[in-house]
Length: 305
Length: 283
Image 1 (cartoon, rainbow over the protein chains, first blue to last red):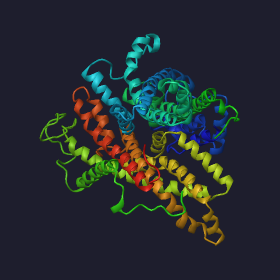
Image 2: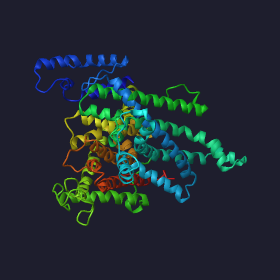
Image 3: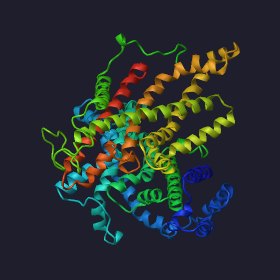
Image 4: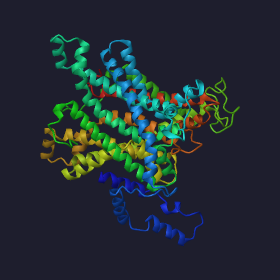
């Protein structure tokens, strides 16, 4: 975490141009610029800036946006009410879609539809997120006029149905992208299970194929899939930038993009810090779930990295 | 891994799988088109030809964009841009990644630990996000910046792979033998390590190439890639989305071009893996 904070700090200080420039108007005299630099703290040496920055992180003070003056943490909190449900719903949809399809692709790998699923998931991995988004907009917003092409109601979640209607296409986009790669992992995990000795033993003891697969297979196959799920969820959180741009959603990703465009360091830093935190939490949660499912992992002490 | 150096089989005995053939054909097609645009395009890529946002016709196979430029021409030029980004980014990622990976594999325990931990953190960030930050850190977006950013961002993946592969080779008895007989570590890299790890690395480069093409398109889509008039597929798609209600066809063709190149590269990599490593048969 400390290293991550340091990397972020250095990366951001590489940005050319003094952040104080965002505070003063064009044509400000040197005195005003000097005052702005003192206010932002960019007149201090780099090491001092870093110590100050670590202190702020420790107390969860992410500073205020250089552009709007709003505290970054408040802004992030507001935007998370969009990004978190969006990611979570897409994640659930992806699991509901990918797990049955992945198992089907493995069990029926000799049939044409089993192969078709594999081929389509192969294709899905090669398609960039934003093109899927644009295609969905073309089909469902332009041609069928079923869903809006983007945006989010200003009333937020006070009208849940309307909000869901607005988010339907973004959710579908993320879910499709996620499930394309998930299907491949579920399929290969299922193949491992099918080829295992314990499944053959269960069958020999008189269990039906489906029964054996459900009773013994799911628990065993789930362990590797869950660690992949954790990684996928994390990269979706961080990768929300593109999807939010496609559907012009005011989420965390668009805050990051806006921050980069306007050289608004506190915003960029804050978003990256909070999303790194979330990513670590997700990884931690995935670890715990794995231990719950697989008793063999419980014996090991934590931190197997 | 055997003690003999796995060398790519000569073309005559190459197990050419259908996967490899399809992949090679798709990639080859893009290369031919990309090279062709250097000397000839159906229209001048920047010229206004015919009406604005015209649907596909015989004269304009993919229609025209909002300024009346021929989309098919722009897509052809896009192939050249995508390929140059891929080549540039993979070259950067390969040179930095392989060097770092080898250094980590040869370095002392402490240095190796620090490098490995740093790489793990860098890999946790999606390539696109790192590239975005690097583009933001440089002065303004350009094709060169995009190549540089994507190359740097994906070098950590190459470095980690190289480190793992090289360590595996270095654990072999014949390395100890070579060391005892006085071979310098550069000699060991050249004679033993590189020949053993390059087949796997090449396959990974092909995959990185595809990821770089997607990353460039995404950067351009976000407005952080090559600025106009560079007809990057990502920018074409972004412009097409702006006019999706009046001219929905514009969002199709650039995407197909992009996806066909990436799929071609992935299939090509799969095929290469079968050739380079006969023990690893695909299920």
